[in-house]
Amino acid sequence: EAQVTQNPRYLITVTGKKLTVTCSQNMNHEYMSWYRQDPGLGLRQIYYSMNVEVTDKGDVPEGYKVSRKEKRNFPLILESPSPNQTSLYFCASGERDSYEQYFGPGTRLTVT
Amino acid sequence: GDSVTQMEGPVTLSEEAFLTINCTYTATGYPSLFWYVQYPGEGLQLLLKATKADDKGSNKGFEATYRKETTSFHLEKGSVQVSDSAVYFCALSAGSTLTFGKGTMLLVSP
Image (cartoon, rainbow over all chains, first blue to last red; front, side, top):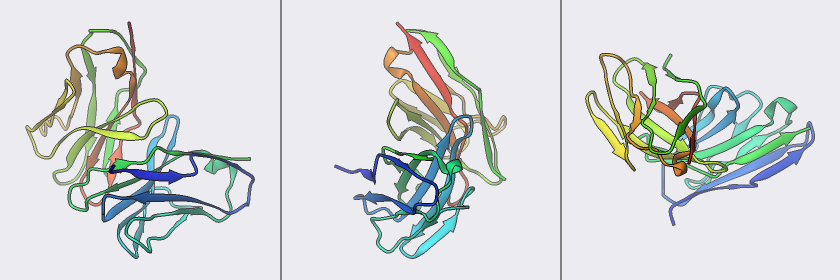
């Protein structure tokens, strides 16, 4: 089944404790992206990647890191999480030239 | 920069009512336009798309027409069902990324 998977689905952590949210897709898509969803703000893009070893900042990259060492994986790293990063995070992938995106189920992160 | 504006929700309708969710955009060039739907507890799914002016996207009884002259891409459905209750996002792509509107929640009651 074609899908985007994210882990974990739910995470509660404390300020400053490094964490990684994994994202994997099995559709051989070149394009992958991370978004955060907050009430009243919709979806905002954090980082995206057009291909392996190529990443670019989105609209709200501060406090986040990403890497793209393999085509299928695009982990999101929070080196020192803060409460304002409490949010619902979505990973997405797509074919490079179509711009349609397939979304994962989301990761709800709470930072206390 | 590119932007998408959607009507604020929630939109509350009775089953079988007609639905319109307004969406307008600002973009340089000729973007592709999309409607995504998010059911409770799930990620976003592509509902329909249009890639050029006057194209009509349609799926599951929903449709939207790309209107370049009014920079709009309004979502319509002739008869909504309770199962259509979800959040709907209008989006555009004019380069390497998608720009989303803030989303409109639709609540359909029996």
